[in-house]
Amino acid sequence: MITPVRRSTSIQSRRDSLFDPESRALNPAHFFLNIADVVIALYSEDPDFKIEIDRATRKFLVAQADPDVRVQAGWGDFPENNDGKKMFDSGILWQLYSGDRSYRFHFTTPTLGSVPYKIARFDHEFTSGEVLFHHPYFPSGEPLYPLDYPLDEILISILLARGKGVEVHGCGVVDSRGRGRLFVGKSGAGKTTMARLWENQPGITILSDDRIILRRVESTICMYGTPWHGEADLASPEKTPLTELYFLTKGSKNEIVSLRISDGVGRLFACSFPPYYTQEGLDFTLGFLEEIVRAIPCHELKFLPDEKVLGFILEEEYFR
Image (cartoon, rainbow, N blue to C red; front, top):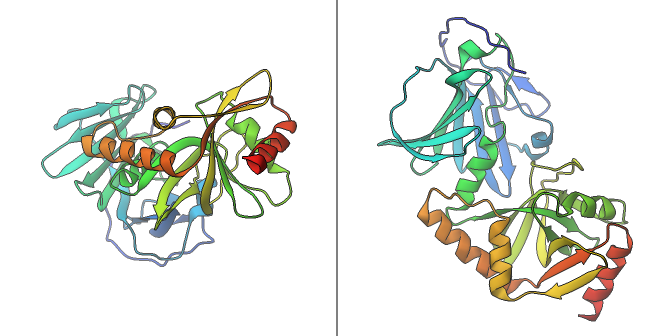
């Protein structure tokens, strides 16, 4: 819970520091996150601001790399009023505004009031930005993760939609031969159940039990793990070629039904995270989803939640 604290702020002299992968909170700090080969450089030049990377995301820390976007973090003190055109309202936590030279994301909560607790501003190309926290809302010295949910996921989704890939609701399973199976479904479809069934099988790696990123690597569709896990708390920074795609449905028996391309695209889009506020992003996402469905066998998997479904899947694939 955030405890409101009223205090004045000042930005002290700026200085650089080296990246220390063993530290949870550095001041100032430079971190590099690699999520699905999209690199974010996250840093602070404010000695009063301490960055803390959350537990799941620490797996995605890498040594210094050439970033797709640079994000600077620090303290701010926001006015009550707001200028700019509202482009999108999530209805719960955040709103997107456009200005002449930037996009701004405002994050609010009824607990604290109408003034945003955080504002993220990015240039129109999303190559650089800053994240500022409203200092009066936070205790002095409290370490914070500037990209905390949902900003990290929003930012990656926007970068992916600029011709790189797409994020979907899915459980990604890699077997000992490097075959990648993606089990797609909305909340309650059985992604976590499927992850737990596969988890203890020999040679199995779970990339995520809830969020997977799909990208084209040369001529291959690959799936990547993400930090945004589900109830099974499974997240891996690894990637693998995607070989099979299943849409999960709970059934009275185990059954696999092949899907038409149009059905596969529609179902995949319904479980994806496109930026609805940009036409270009939507056009790319739809085109890429069709490319995926044409390249990868897509099926509906109706299943019972026990280990027998694993043998059923392997047998069906063997004789397919």
